[in-house]
Length: 521
Length: 70
Image 1 (cartoon, rainbow over the protein chains, first blue to last red):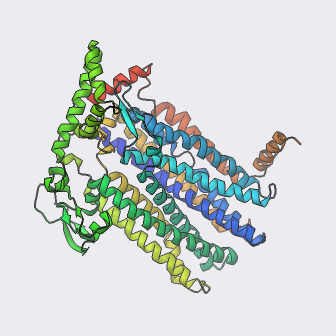
Image 2 (image 1 turned 60 degrees about the vertical axis):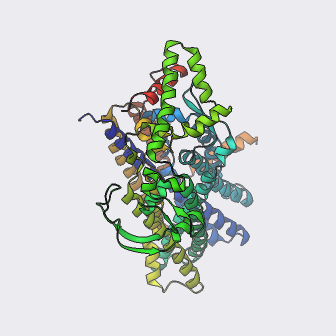
Image 3 (image 1 turned 90 degrees about the vertical axis):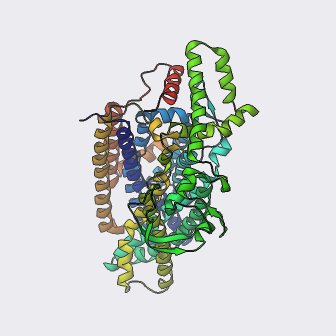
């Protein structure tokens, strides 16, 4: 294999991480959402006085939950392998900030999930119905708690707070656990992700129920499940929309370049319009005057309203963020690069002083990085917070992939709107039997993959839109990556592609078989 | 029956009565073996494993962070 340069190592490592994360996210949302739906159904079973049809219904969906859980479990561990091998500089740099949430996830949430899942599957007729129901709810809550701590770690990468960089250990150290664990980005991301999982699972439940209705099978299961699926789906979709709106405001404040990429805005505007849909001009670059959009459909002032909840707010464009805009207090990327370079220079002074045993210089530089002092806080706010810019060669490197971010955002939002309408229509028409509404039933069956598509598109917006950073403004991907034998990254990329595809095929085959068998097992 | 014996019997009978679960456990075990026995062992060594102590790892990472641009 041809030796790769650093850019190719970064690209392959990113591709490998993206592949692993995207496959992992095929399993996670169904676990999150179907766990909650099973718990809701079992609650209904108890409240209705233990009718056997309801028991069969609950057990059927639990079986599908179990298949998805078993195939998906541990697929996320590969991401942790990749941190240690491909992204060792990054992993060391984030230190305990990443370690603590992941440890809590592993010890508390996963073990809670794993303990009570045994009761959920083995405990029917062996433990009391109330204890069984409690176990089912604890499995659902445990899955969500697992997701929470993973999302805390991810959110810190988007919005690094509650830490201080220790020069001696080369690690960020947590100074405020609450700031990290309950950062507004983490809370919003958690609600957005779990509710999107609920929508994915609701589409899954509604789609399979609709398939049974079309086949005139499982009449009780299909009718009841469709109703519960549509109610939870509508609640989930509205929560997704609400948390998505909050997320938009946070992105505008914390990651304005991501917002500019999501909307493909090059020049900032007061009262900025929202482009509902358009075709992007592939020839458009920051340094030319080509048109950006073809055939745009716009709503005036809407982007400002979404970004700042004020229709006259200024939304910076890519040019403002790269070249600066003094009128709106936006530093140019070149200015940030100089500040980041100063932080790097001081770090290099420390390294040199340590090698020569110059303790006076070491102490002097350490004081700059000590955020407990006024001098340290000033250095942090003026220089260290821009450290990542010090690694860039050109200001334009801060621009993420615009077309991928722009179109993914529209896929996510468009499908989100479609889901709200779909669930509302099902509930409205579902006041009467739905068996005769063949078009709607077929639509529900074909909508099953759309939940997954929306989730994947959402993560693309979230992660591609914040490139080139692994940690926002502090560390770009080029510095985060390990010095690797590049050929092994390519090899493992294809190994994962094969392994995960096999797992996915196994999941689909086992699921389809169980769906064909139905609840009469 | 003691609580431990009851818990043991609960799991024992649960595993014995599995049907679909056996296939799923097989998939889980094969997957875990591939991940830890093959992938982790052969393809995912800890990139900083060559350094014996934390200060050595820290010095290496700091060197990487302050090295000229790659």
